[in-house]
Length: 152
Image (cartoon, rainbow, N blue to C red; front, side):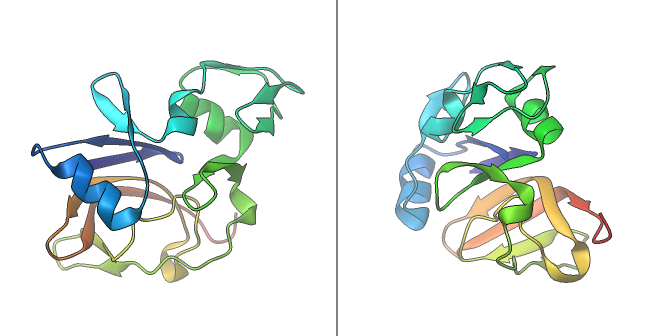
């Protein structure tokens, strides 16, 4: 299954018929349809306008912003917490994300879907990524990625 995560907004594109069932079984997360892709139910409900001081998802907007939900999340300093299945402040994620740089430049995450916004040692805080899930080996291969510098 192809995985896309833009500033904490996760979407998935099945490559095979059973991909959704495999991802749900492996991670315990349920997915819903969002256009041509799949996502988590709380993310599917987000709109394209956030007003400062008004509710957006389960948080209150820090800035007024019109754009995609991923852009709104970036502008407000939020990400989607996989365990809580809710938007959270980037700074609240403190659990280290284990990532392994491969010789081909890809980054490998083992066992669990990578948590956007989690600190990841020498790389910094993982903000966005795209890659694939390999269910047979329980690997998530990140082919493109964006990190926030540790000094930020």
